[in-house]
Image 1: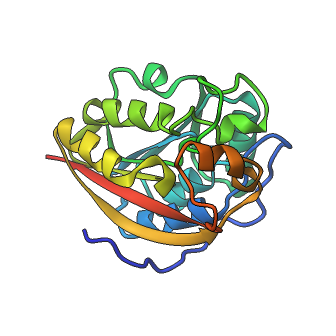
Image 2: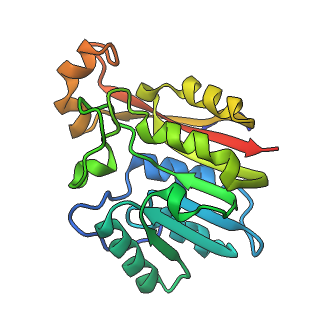
Length: 229
């Protein structure tokens, strides 16, 4: 699957969200478009890591997946996703906690994730607050690398991982890591979006870290697709 421009898809409308929960944005929409390219049917078991409002999990459920599991470390996100599943009358199993612990011993045909990926000065993700949805350590890879390391065990033979993150985190580093884990990985899609308020607030720090140039005003988003042989 080559890197391409994907056709936008409609995410579930009228989503409820508690104040600290990440609402669907450009990265969510790009991942939804990549998800629309995958086969999802009555035999497909789907996992969403870091579900937020549940938008992507609900999208998979609406397409007729056999079962959709969504996991998030944030209780407000779990409550939000469960409420949206009820509002949209779609079957969704929403679990609270670390994705690796809550899915131990299980495997899936399709995994989708929009993990925290914004480089941040702190060495660890925040324990609470809205920043928990995006801050991911000095290189933005604290959660990305955990997903890469777990994907091989979580995916069934022929299963697919779709992960979106910023080009600031190193798309090729993600492809290389997944390849080392035994998966066939490539950049499936790219999109360029204006810098949001979080990146703008960290411009000086990002420049000092060599992660951004003084004239940069746009961020590249990438979707990584990895398949288990």
